[in-house]
Image (cartoon, rainbow, N blue to C red; front, side):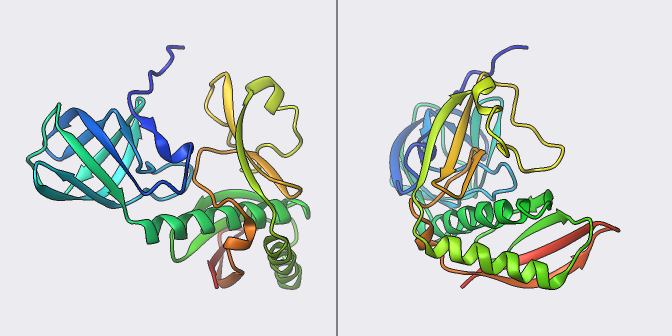
Length: 239
């Protein structure tokens, strides 16, 4: 299998609190722009991408979404005019990013708490205002779900530190529960990025998170949907 060369350095995975950076355009295809590095998080793993602005040659461009393809973070902008070699200032919508960070960390805690009672995540979508999990329950019980959310909120309030680091793939897969998404394995790469919520959860993960669970607030279930005999779609927000 050919190794994918990372053309875009994702600064957000080193420091999720970084709000802006300077970068050079390495590819420009009309409204699809690739930089040598970026502060923007590209959509992936059920987590929505960042939005924000690019300031270049005295003009501001809106970044509508960012997607990753073959090692490139492709920034989809609202107007033409950017070209290869241009040096730009990249600025994320920080309010949106921080909401995503809080939601993502809270989702990990909720998912790991549900995992303790045998519920596996079969699908997910993490957004700033409302997110969803599809859970596989052998015997769904609303009271048990409410107890799970309450327990997850206690964990969030405990102020657990959130750490990120890398582990060799073989070593990572020795950790129980390192993958909590049913029928999904991390990419076939030799080194995995690990997100550890100290004392609460540890998973292979490529997204942005807060530094402490106390930043998240509380999880509140907003609605439920049936998605099959054993599957429940659970929507939630943070309050």
